[in-house]
Amino acid sequence: MTHTKKHRFNKHQKSKTPKKTMASKANIHVLYEQSVQCVESEIDFVDETFKKLRGRKAKLLREDFCGTANTSCEWIRRRNTNKAIAVDLNEEVLAWGREHKIGKLTDAQAKRITLINENVMTVDTGKVDTALAMNFSYWIFEDRPTMIKYFKGIYNTLVDDGILFLDAFGGYEAYQEMRERTEHDKFTYVWDQASYDPVTGHCVCHIHFKFKDGSKINKAFTYEWRLWSLPELTEMLTEAGFKATVYWEGTDEDTDEGNGIFVPATEGEADAGWIAYIVAEK
Image 1 (cartoon, rainbow, N blue to C red):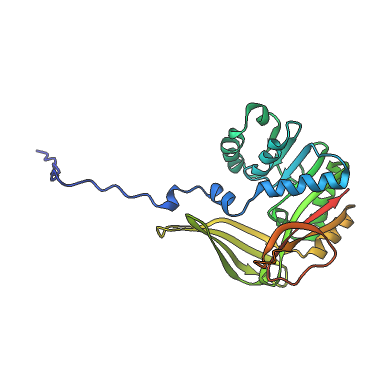
Image 2 (tube, rainbow, N blue to C red; image 1 turned 60 degrees about the vertical axis):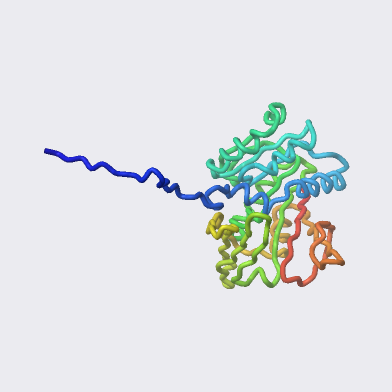
């Protein structure tokens, strides 16, 4: 005879449901946008600088290493004549961007953006007015021949008066193994420079997120790059055929921090940490 156990519950006893943590409810792409990206100011710089240098507005933009294509979506929203081609190897991230970023555009806007799941070194996008490789993503190319090959590929993709926009970071703290924390309303953004090899220039960086309830997302993003210097980058761009200019950020007199205004410069300051744009004209 088989006996089946019957569980007895006190009528006052409540079944325990594990409480969801802030980390479990968060999305790393949203957190990234809130703590790292400012696509509005980025596109402001691209749009205004192109117009100033070329006397016309760019229309067709190519965004390499686009991730969720957040920047391309901002470009599309600026004018109904703007079009964008967004390229990335990670189909999963592209799919998220397709649903959550492009999905928020109007139907007419969404028709003007093309997502391509391919390698930026080999993709054929046709001619474009301007190309972007932002958030230091192109530093994944860790040797000169590969980087120059990438730059030459972009050079050939641009129209005759096209411009490539890049960003870069540095400063003496960039070579240190350290963590930098930035407080936001609901979380703490942690930039973790985990390792740096002075012989090869290879560095490994992580992004972590910590929340007010004590939960965390460790290594939400991991990057393995070469820490390139501005002279190295501008020299390689020149070798690829570009005229490269560094745009240095000004300083706010009250806070002694960057003021978000970037201007052409032939000299910079030996800051602990800086971010600059590189404008490469064909």
